[in-house]
Length: 147
Image 1 (tube, rainbow, N blue to C red):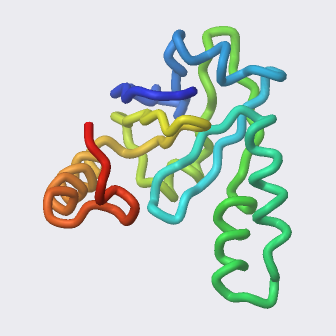
Image 2: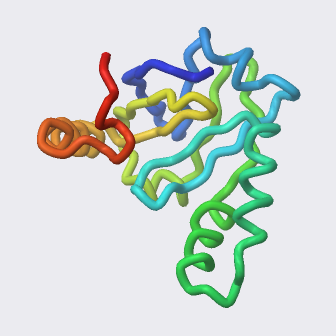
Protein backbone atom coordinates (compact mmCIF):
# COMPACT_ATOMS: atom_id res chain seq x y z
CA UNK A 1 0.00 0.00 0.00
CA UNK A 2 1.42 3.34 -1.07
CA UNK A 3 0.73 6.07 1.43
CA UNK A 4 2.30 9.30 2.57
CA UNK A 5 3.38 12.44 0.77
CA UNK A 6 6.91 13.41 -0.19
CA UNK A 7 8.10 16.71 -1.61
CA UNK A 8 10.76 15.86 -4.17
CA UNK A 9 12.73 17.55 -6.94
CA UNK A 10 13.16 16.67 -10.57
CA UNK A 11 16.77 16.95 -11.68
CA UNK A 12 17.87 18.95 -14.73
CA UNK A 13 17.14 15.95 -17.01
CA UNK A 14 13.62 15.46 -15.62
CA UNK A 15 14.47 12.45 -13.46
CA UNK A 16 12.62 11.71 -10.24
CA UNK A 17 14.28 9.75 -7.44
CA UNK A 18 11.62 7.46 -6.00
CA UNK A 19 11.94 7.45 -2.19
CA UNK A 20 13.87 4.40 -0.99
CA UNK A 21 11.04 3.20 1.25
CA UNK A 22 8.77 2.75 -1.80
CA UNK A 23 11.18 1.33 -4.39
CA UNK A 24 10.80 -2.38 -3.67
CA UNK A 25 7.00 -2.28 -3.48
CA UNK A 26 6.75 -0.11 -6.59
CA UNK A 27 8.87 -2.59 -8.53
CA UNK A 28 7.11 -5.69 -7.19
CA UNK A 29 6.57 -8.26 -9.92
CA UNK A 30 9.31 -6.77 -12.10
CA UNK A 31 11.42 -3.68 -12.44
CA UNK A 32 9.07 -1.69 -14.68
CA UNK A 33 6.66 0.99 -13.53
CA UNK A 34 4.01 2.85 -15.52
CA UNK A 35 3.64 6.62 -15.50
CA UNK A 36 0.61 8.20 -17.15
CA UNK A 37 -1.63 11.27 -17.23
CA UNK A 38 -4.71 11.78 -15.07
CA UNK A 39 -7.70 14.01 -15.99
CA UNK A 40 -7.09 16.13 -12.84
CA UNK A 41 -3.77 17.35 -14.27
CA UNK A 42 -1.42 15.16 -12.26
CA UNK A 43 0.47 12.00 -13.21
CA UNK A 44 -0.16 8.48 -11.94
CA UNK A 45 2.68 6.13 -11.04
CA UNK A 46 1.82 2.41 -10.85
CA UNK A 47 3.73 -0.82 -10.49
CA UNK A 48 3.47 -2.32 -13.98
CA UNK A 49 1.49 -5.36 -12.79
CA UNK A 50 -1.06 -3.14 -11.01
CA UNK A 51 -1.45 -0.96 -14.10
CA UNK A 52 -2.19 -3.80 -16.54
CA UNK A 53 -5.83 -4.48 -15.49
CA UNK A 54 -6.56 -0.75 -15.31
CA UNK A 55 -5.11 -0.12 -18.75
CA UNK A 56 -7.10 -3.05 -20.12
CA UNK A 57 -10.35 -1.69 -18.63
CA UNK A 58 -9.74 1.74 -20.14
CA UNK A 59 -8.96 0.23 -23.54
CA UNK A 60 -12.19 -1.78 -23.36
CA UNK A 61 -14.30 1.38 -23.11
CA UNK A 62 -16.41 2.17 -26.15
CA UNK A 63 -14.55 4.18 -28.77
CA UNK A 64 -17.95 5.52 -29.86
CA UNK A 65 -18.29 7.49 -26.62
CA UNK A 66 -16.50 10.85 -26.73
CA UNK A 67 -15.74 10.94 -23.01
CA UNK A 68 -14.38 7.38 -23.12
CA UNK A 69 -12.13 8.28 -26.04
CA UNK A 70 -10.62 11.16 -24.04
CA UNK A 71 -10.00 8.87 -21.07
CA UNK A 72 -8.26 6.45 -23.44
CA UNK A 73 -6.19 9.26 -24.94
CA UNK A 74 -5.11 10.48 -21.52
CA UNK A 75 -4.62 7.26 -19.58
CA UNK A 76 -3.44 4.91 -22.33
CA UNK A 77 -2.08 7.44 -24.81
CA UNK A 78 0.27 9.02 -22.27
CA UNK A 79 1.20 5.75 -20.49
CA UNK A 80 4.92 5.06 -20.44
CA UNK A 81 6.57 1.91 -19.12
CA UNK A 82 9.77 2.91 -17.35
CA UNK A 83 12.71 1.07 -15.83
CA UNK A 84 14.18 2.86 -12.81
CA UNK A 85 17.95 3.31 -13.01
CA UNK A 86 20.43 1.96 -10.43
CA UNK A 87 19.73 4.99 -8.19
CA UNK A 88 15.96 4.37 -8.28
CA UNK A 89 15.26 7.33 -10.58
CA UNK A 90 12.67 7.39 -13.33
CA UNK A 91 12.76 9.75 -16.28
CA UNK A 92 9.59 11.81 -16.60
CA UNK A 93 9.26 12.49 -20.32
CA UNK A 94 8.92 16.05 -21.64
CA UNK A 95 5.34 15.27 -22.77
CA UNK A 96 4.29 14.16 -19.29
CA UNK A 97 6.13 17.05 -17.60
CA UNK A 98 4.29 19.45 -19.91
CA UNK A 99 0.92 17.77 -19.33
CA UNK A 100 1.22 18.04 -15.53
CA UNK A 101 3.03 21.42 -15.60
CA UNK A 102 5.89 19.87 -13.64
CA UNK A 103 8.77 22.16 -12.96
CA UNK A 104 11.45 21.34 -10.41
CA UNK A 105 9.52 20.79 -7.16
CA UNK A 106 6.91 18.02 -7.12
CA UNK A 107 4.72 16.15 -4.63
CA UNK A 108 4.51 12.37 -4.67
CA UNK A 109 1.27 11.40 -2.93
CA UNK A 110 0.38 7.81 -2.04
CA UNK A 111 -3.07 6.61 -3.06
CA UNK A 112 -3.00 3.01 -1.90
CA UNK A 113 -2.43 1.13 -5.15
CA UNK A 114 -0.42 3.89 -6.83
CA UNK A 115 1.06 7.36 -6.47
CA UNK A 116 -0.02 10.72 -7.82
CA UNK A 117 2.71 13.10 -8.97
CA UNK A 118 1.84 16.81 -8.80
CA UNK A 119 3.58 20.09 -9.44
CA UNK A 120 4.05 21.35 -5.86
CA UNK A 121 2.38 24.72 -6.53
CA UNK A 122 -0.66 23.12 -8.16
CA UNK A 123 -0.79 20.55 -5.34
CA UNK A 124 -0.86 23.29 -2.71
CA UNK A 125 -3.64 25.11 -4.60
CA UNK A 126 -5.74 21.96 -4.97
CA UNK A 127 -5.11 20.96 -1.35
CA UNK A 128 -6.37 24.29 -0.03
CA UNK A 129 -9.52 24.03 -2.18
CA UNK A 130 -10.10 20.47 -0.97
CA UNK A 131 -9.68 21.42 2.69
CA UNK A 132 -12.13 24.30 2.31
CA UNK A 133 -14.65 22.11 0.50
CA UNK A 134 -14.25 19.17 2.89
CA UNK A 135 -15.43 21.26 5.81
CA UNK A 136 -18.65 22.23 4.05
CA UNK A 137 -19.53 19.15 2.00
CA UNK A 138 -18.04 15.74 2.78
CA UNK A 139 -18.09 13.13 -0.01
CA UNK A 140 -21.10 10.81 -0.39
CA UNK A 141 -20.92 7.78 1.86
CA UNK A 142 -19.11 9.53 4.69
CA UNK A 143 -22.16 10.75 6.58
CA UNK A 144 -21.55 8.34 9.47
CA UNK A 145 -17.79 8.24 9.13
CA UNK A 146 -15.59 9.25 12.04
CA UNK A 147 -11.87 9.50 12.57
